[in-house]
Length: 281
Length: 263
Image (cartoon, rainbow over the protein chains, first blue to last red):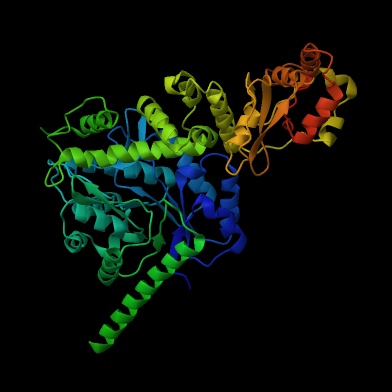
């Protein structure tokens, strides 16, 4: 039985409708299905055969301006219509002063930010009448006035709002490299009971003034360092619904399914290893 | 200096848009990669992703001018008019008029009209697919009431006029199109853009047809609209054009307003 899902992307929609590949779930970006385009009809048909996850990218949970109620209403209507198993967005912001930047912009991790994000998550959960999961972002900078680490901040959000954490393992690797952090120490800051999902994707290595900087472009197979970190994550927290994402230079569906199968084999390997250790003990 | 979150976000936005705000400099940590280089990653991604969204919506414009030209133009538009909300298929309403004023593109006078056509197709595609007025529903209307009917066009429709043959220019800009030259002097075109079952498409209209549909779209009765169509000249054949529009699914079902329904 499939234990890993794939991100549903427009170029694959017709093929998935036609061939119905085995996958644990399909995750779609909320903002791509808020109009009346034919793709929404296709997803409504797929809904009968697949578990769905709705991943929003534009709610801007980190906005000091609070949530855009009009957009929230549209996302809530989509969630109501598709009844997904999971709903999530990111620990980031993308809206200020009525302008939307289509990026997951970074937050300072302060008490003030915690109040803002927690209030926005609560508003979202109230509107959807269900808990959501919040994903750790890929970071390219840190603010000097942060008073908490990112895992401390995420854990505090889970405590305050009851939200789950969507642990993007690639983002942990990207952030840790770019901000000179130890990814294992980063994982130490989370409690297993708060983690509801994993994400995996590829990243690019770019040059920033002669220094390598990792870019979360979702444009390649998962890097070996991320597979290792995923295995480490599984040993600490156990398996969760796991999603394979690909957004840039989207390959054939078979490649995406192959990456998801690899995630499943990593999960199975860690479970076997844990079983052996339990028997030996 | 510690910025309040709202101020930090405003400063970040200003930095991305190149509005010369340097309040962030003290707030972002630097090491072997300095703060400016780190901020540049975000600025680059914002413009790259917005230009990609515009390239998806205005694919024919990009097909005509090439990716490099398009990205430069899209970047300039995004810097002036960033999205107001997160649904990117709804971003770009003002792009056609931006293209019309874009000096670098003034050698391509039809480009803004092609952008209007791309936008109209995008809007039509996102429109809900409502029920279409069929023959049976039409036949249920007593003949003597027909002239006073006001028919609604289906959601997402658009009427587009251009002094250039933008239908053929648009077709030539599609991937895999044969690179035949389009004669720009073949006269004006009037196009009807429609949401269809699985896509959006456009058809060319004769002048009388365009006037007829424009009148209906403005809320005129069939009789008034027919007079507008006939006013364009003797070539307008009301019954032939009406049959064509029924076949295309131009009219929305159940939205016709008979005089009795008007209160």
